[in-house]
Length: 457
Image 1 (cartoon, rainbow, N blue to C red):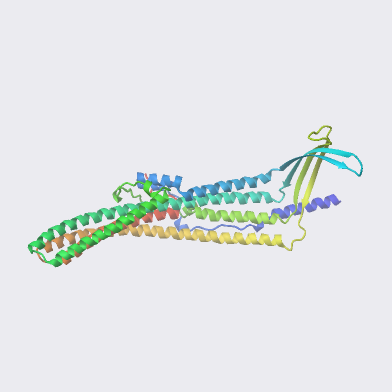
Image 2 (cartoon, rainbow, N blue to C red):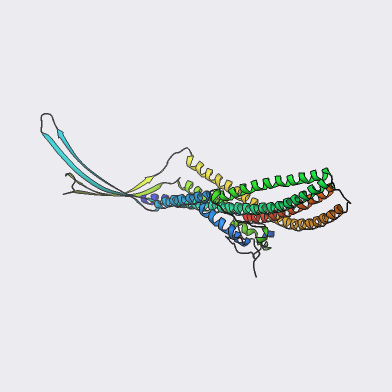
């Protein structure tokens, strides 16, 4: 009868432990239907190659190999793998071996010395029975930790590549501005030399010559600033690829060499699930649910099988004529009274899981916002590209007409200078707008963490 009661109690504990599923926190969240589209381009991990810049491809490859943030993230993954191996070791029994040998001399009062020698060797084993899934939950937590470190690596990788591509485009834009300013500066310098001779002949006023000199100095100052920015961007790129600035050699390039891909119209909200921050937030919920199960299982007794075997001999460093011992046992460990600490720990883990669910929703909503903002930015910048080009065309006509009017004496030199400055600013605006459009494409790529390129037929 007692055996039956113990067996029934054991079953009751078992099924009550299995009922921890009702404590799990669900993580379902509906994605907006208006963004879903199944005809979406496949993910392209090497999205930067679509710009068809060999130097950029080489820089990205170097950064993935040498960047310190990437290397540190890889070490964290290695640490997480080792932690998982430690957790998985709990599935197997622990085996300990020990050996001891000793020699003692003992002398009673006025008696001769009596020698005693002994040698003992033993082997013991302990195996914990995972009746309530506590060890399985511990392994699930370790596996989730490994997965999250891998998502951290993906986040760092995406951020690194996006920053590198963005900085490289800024470097190209800087080269474009330097070339533009140098061209204007040389033209203005030749114009100043001509005006200097005209002034000596008395055909122009000192005011016109002074204004031209001021314009020339202004462009010279702009060049100095642009060269400083070039060095700063160069050193930034060197840092991203993990090299000293002196060892990084960059070629001259321009926006004309960039193949600008089109944004695919078949974008799906399910692409957001590929974002490493979204995936990590979801994995945190899974880890919290495993922690709930682990805390719940800690309320129930733990059982362990123990076994031992040994030999002992009354000789030094020898097991001759040994005495052999064998042992087998079943251990039970149960917390009878803990002031409700274990139950409160379950509630704490539940609260953490609910917190992670809210964090998942927040990360997902933030991702949706970033994608929407990026798409709007791409559309707006593409429209601005056309407008800036149209403005430049009008400034070309304005400058041409202003030069004619100045030659015929219809306007003063100050008006001609204003037309030249407006024309130069229009050219710079086109360069800046091209950079803004490319930057918006990079931002869209980063926000989706997937391919947004138009599929080829």
